[in-house]
Image (cartoon, rainbow, N blue to C red; front, side, top):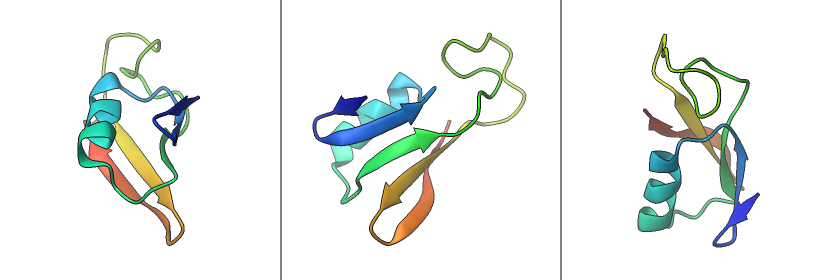
Length: 66
């Protein structure tokens, strides 16, 4: 999916998308790989923080820990 010109891949929480739109970093998009417990649509029990990655020309980095 794309949001305001960014790609959003995986079970990314709305809070991470809001952060992306507020901060408008120089990224192509954000992703939450896999199907971790506690992510949207994957049940309520969260075992560990969700790590959302930012993807840009320079590579991949941690965008948010939720």
